[in-house]
Length: 410
Image: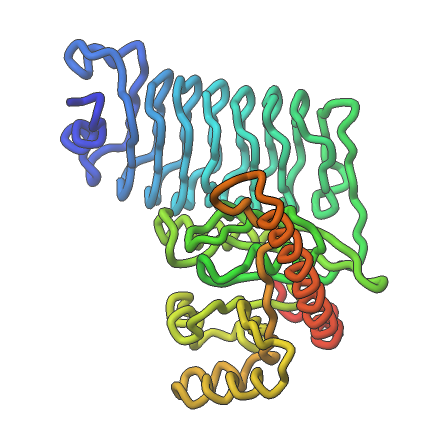
């Protein structure tokens, strides 16, 4: 039973108001568990008001969450055997975190504002973002053979970085101190260029077409699109592109709503995207799919100041080329509710586009049917032209509304 539910055993053994130290190691686990050899599965340590230290070593937990432990200052998770994901949040006094030599594949969220030192060397992490850890000074992520993405955009105090023996090919340190000490692989390219870039943040509900819009804007297929109502964007994703001499950076955030992630993790990942651009945002694109009122309510933005920096993008609007149809839809939205009317009046406008899919799967049936293949190719060509028109409309609008250097400073 313990193998299936370590949480039940943990909750009976440790008391939230009492514990100052939680120390569970493979060496002493047999005595603690009455002969059982290890802890398997998922574990959440949450709401321990007096907890100062967490030491878990050589365990077989696959998922670990540490949440809302206000006195916690030290976490040692080294040499985990099967840890796949780690989530740390609301631990304001935590300054040092060590999960080196662990089989950690995903650091799902790291929201530790006072973290000073992080050792995640010798793991299987592929992507690492420290944008919610602005005070970090020492980062060791060496010997991570799968690490291909490292974001330290918001790490203004970083003094030491060891990212040697990884898959990193380039690293942007433009916001880090000039005096930073770096240990790196010989072929890693360090950049510090501070070109003027206009940052565009894309937000919206899952299934609204955010990632598709990001692909249309950048003229790429780098963002994961989904034809279903399930988000394929698991973290924020950035892409720099240039149009008519102006550089833009598009930041696609995880969708809100129909996602398997808890709301806290969703908001954390959106925050990661925001804090990855500390130089500021020029424009927010709020992507709305089919139902304006429901999607705005799901996002819970009404009452905030965000709309004065925001352009609403109505996607999946097949009559987007007809000005009359667009104006009619806008008027219907105003009449639908007072809230809608206030949002429309306070934002930077509504843009209507349609971004149909271009990765069209083969039709069901005989794969040798030439007519089906011809129809598919024809649809792809038509959809590409539609997306090109949408891109032109969007970029013309951004050129007009992004005249100021910074509209929203983080």
